[in-house]
Each structure stands twice: as C-alpha cells, then as structure tokens.
Image (cartoon, rainbow, N blue to C red; front, side, top):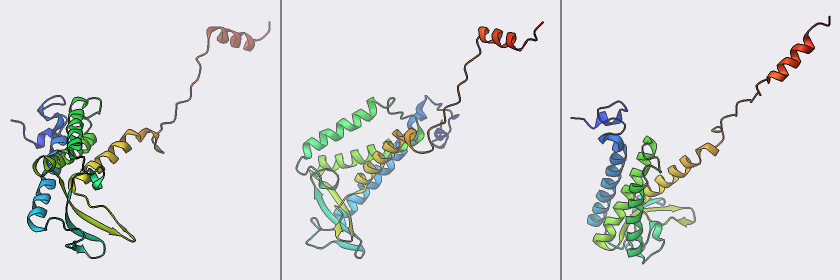
Length: 205
C-alpha cells in the first residue's frame, strides 16, 4: 500500500498519473478547512455573538489585534452583504471550476496544488457556514493607526493568499530576471555566399 509520504515523491508507487497526483492539494485543502472550522467553533463557544462594538472586542495585542464574533452575510471583509444565497452559489461554482479546469490550471504543479488547496479549503469553509448558520463567522480584528481593518477569518485568509500566489505565478515570466535572453541568431551561410567567399580569397593566376 502506498503511504502518504510516498505520494510526495515523483517516483513513488502512485506515479505521476496515479492516486498520489493531487496529494499536496488534499493536504493543503484539509489543513485549511480543519483550521477554519476549528477556530470558528471555538469562537462560537467562547465569544459572545455580535462582539465588535458592544460588547467590546477581546484584546490579544492591545491597540492592534483583537478577537471578535461577527456574523457576516457577505463575502470577505463584509463585501456584498445580504447576498448569502448568491455567494453560496458562487462558492459552489468556484469549486466546480477548480475541478473541471484542473488541467488548464496546471494543478499538477506542486506549488499550485498548495495554492488551490488553501483556496478551495477556504471556499468550502465559508460555504459550510452559509449552509449551516446563514452567515460566516469573522473573528480576526486588526486595528491600524487611524484605521480599523474589516474583521475576517481563516477561510478568507486562505482564499486571499491563494489568489495572490496564483496571480504572481501567472505573471512570473514578466517579472524582472525571469525573461531569458534570446540567443543570438546567426544566419547559415548559403552555398552562393561560400562560393563567392572562396573565389574572392583565391589568388589570381
């Protein structure tokens, strides 16, 4: 039987086209989803619902980082609030697109497996919340000088980080240092040119 560790080897028993092809994706997917659901469950069990303004947030690093418990019916950072059903359908469509277009998305690449793994885990994590609770729990609350960053959660972080990595990967060839210098092209001498060269270099009788 193939062990999970052997799946990380390109020469492992699973082979590049076998069962182990997307192991990195599933590891990233499961890790992100578990972390998201566990943290949300902890927040629901330990922090009063609605904690943001009143009751006040719970300080972790006073003046900078707090825990809250906000029911968000919108997307990440409360965008498109009250569109829960449409956002749920969008999440399902995104997961389906990752599956059906996995070859076009180059999902066999190790980096992209981790990238789409955390994205898919985040999408499903928020999708579960919408289905079970009608809203998503946001609990990470950062205060910057003169600005309070919108609350978010682990799933939002996975989606955002995954999108950023994929965009950088997509444009990697246009980044400085990635463009390979084109090799100098030299035209092959034609027979006529060779004959002309030979004739001009031959001594006069």
